[in-house]
Image: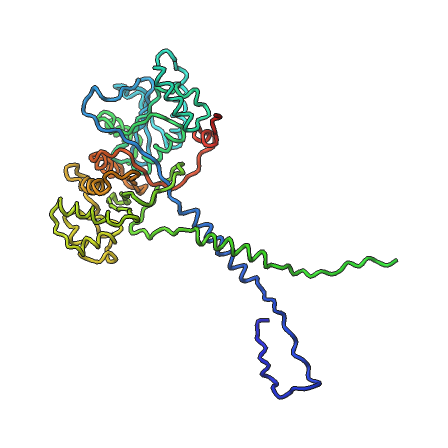
Length: 213
Length: 220
């Protein structure tokens, strides 16, 4: 099919009675070309979509030395999440008890339900009389702009606050995962701070009890 | 009764339009694909649900690799003079005595991962010969001697008064938190509080609150 008729076999036999060379079709078999074309398409489709890095915004507060200027939060609405080694997550609600009885162990999968439940709990205790209406309006505007379908209720979880405390053994992935969890569950107020000595002690004791190295 | 003759049709189809379209798509993807620049240091970023794209110009990228080494990269494709501004600032602050050729080498160095003290030695060789594996990373762990503070200060001076400058933090998922904390510390020291963490895209878990907000449009 792909040979070229050179007519070299019988140059002397010309004239009547000699069979005319068969005219070859000008059509070429395009199948291999198409094959290759599609192979390249699939290759480029895959490389184009897989190599798109995205970014996660992170805003940190300014460090304040002055005790009076520090943000105050209601104890009942606070959930503290501690990130430990070997992908362990610990949390407690409100203040840490002296005997650490409210200190609980969780995982990166289970922590979502903890956050959702705490948010629900804070919402159920919402009392409009305790909230400044000006702040509340602002909150609603922000939620509407963000595209929250329940923006009218945006103010209900105003007391809800998550404090993230990664300890020195937590990995960067753990930190991004937990920040991502804040986005997924639409936690509006969260902060990343250093753990206290007392908390580190409890983590250490728990890790030893659970045999995590 | 004469039987109806069905004309025999060739099973060959004309593939020309098909091929036309295929190659059109192919050329589109070839042109649209932007290849990642070769990474001198292997960094596996963790995934997040955020779909914001990464700025590629007017930014500083601070990379943390899996061994907790910190690297500094200045991204300023459009205005190359900024590279000179930054290195001159560092040179003046630390009295390194860099030659113009060494400063030019800084422009072509993608990542800096050495203490400022060894910067002259690093820039005296051709950037193509830099070996990232042997670089110790910028010292950050000691807050009194966090050299990243100086790098960011130099960048801040170079881009003073310009809007839209970004600080990107690209960390390996396996790196430990203290390295990240030290980077944040250096940025905070320079009064910078907004950062972008480089992540790869992850699917949004269905049914969560974030999932609900994605397709909601408030009626005006």
